[in-house]
Structure formats: structure tokens, C-alpha cells
Length: 79
Picture: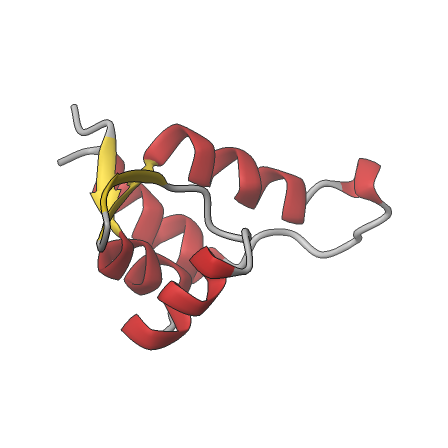
């Protein structure tokens, strides 16, 4: 089971472009592990926690994580 994915793959899960995914990394919204000056990986467990918080009603948020993001995430976690 995969433990990490690329920033590009995280962007695909979220439905955003590669540049937008890197922008979210630099804003601290996508959790990453830095492996080198220009190399990042996204821990799947951390990304899942972020998505759970986004959809959490405890956060005062009444929206759930969109179904397409859940489906994309499932695809990566079962590879």
C-alpha cells in the first residue's frame, strides 16, 4: 500500500492543476515531506486528515468532501 504520492497526484485528487497544487504546498495547505531542494512527497494519511477536517461538521463546516475527491483519493489509496 502506498504511503506517499507526488504533489502532482495530490493535485489530481483535489481536481487542481500542477501549479495550483504547488501553490497549495507553499501555502501550507497540502502537507508534504521535503526530500530535496525541489522534491516533495505528500503523505497520503496526512492528506486524508486534511480532507476529513475540511468536511468536518465539528469545524463549523457543513459541507462534506466532494464525492469526486473521495473517489480520486480511494483510487490512490488502493494502488
